[in-house]
Amino acid sequence: IHPTGKLFVLSDGEGKHTTVELSEPLGEEISGVLEVVGRVTNQATIMCTSYVQFREDKSPFDLQLYNEALKIIHEFPEYFPFG
Amino acid sequence: QRIRSQNIVPCTVSQLLTAEQVDETFRIRDVEISQVTIMGIIRHAEKAPTNILYKVDDMTAAPMDVRQWVDTDEAGGENVVVPPGTYVKVAGHLRSFQNKKSLVAFKIMPLENMNEFTTHILEIVNAHMILRKNLMSASRVPQSFSSADVGGYGGGGSLPVNGLTAHQSQVLNLIKNCPVPEGMSLQELKVQLHNMSMSTIKQAVEFLSSEGHIYSTVDDDHYKSTDAE
Image 1 (tube, rainbow over the protein chains, first blue to last red):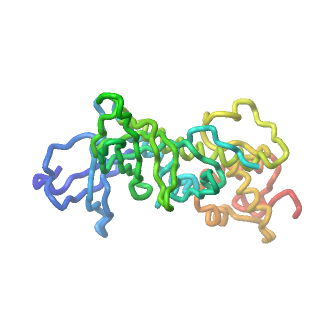
Image 2: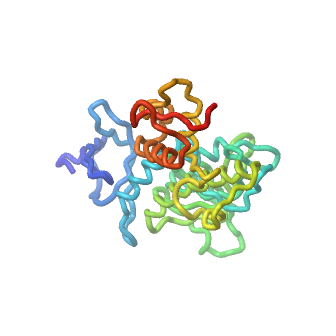
Image 3: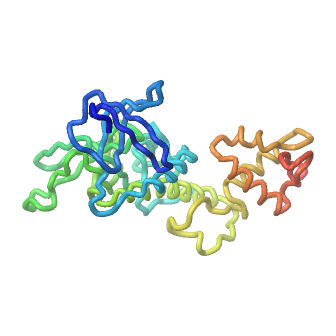
């Protein structure tokens, strides 16, 4: 997380990194797995409109498995339509 | 021939919104659905005397209205409002009123393990694929499925039909219909089958070739069908 609190870096299930920008600095401490909803900018960052922290109090979230699942659902848009 | 769904089918909100209604029944791409499960995040919760109206967002479409009836006789307990920002699993019936779709939930459960979300999205693809395949093959001469394939949503990937999986059938049909003398190239297959990865196409080609459905022509990248069309 950047010192200004307006930027943080996420890494996904494949270890790839992406920068997330916020319009307002973070109002809280965040850690762990986050789901960010936002728009991709032309600098290949994400302009965040909202985020939610996944609960991992009972079990850790398997991010790699989730990544694999995403690839599968994108292979079958007829069974998993978007919009 | 219709397959009446007595199952509870996992769905995306986008699928529910595009479901067609014929009289009392709903269909998603010909598969009849009634009881469904969705998984998403609560964006809004409104408590009324007889019901709680939630808006549940699974990111495939706009948040869906989910209504949960409150048992006015029971004290507290059962009907605590789930706060916005919580991921939940909803089981309920699909309804449509004045062309607007909604769900009437019989169960709303906050997710305790987010890995359930990963399972849910895979189950959606699997369930819809299998239900649709069952629908298609029900109108054909019965195939010889091994007992492990029939019933339930077990196993990964496609169900074999005619001894070939969906991927293999698609690849074979394209090769069969190719008019060019040197046959269909792998590159051309990839262009036509943009949903399929190159490795999936290559696997299908290898299988078809070993079974004798196709043969290579000018090189290992070009194939023709052994069925003279």
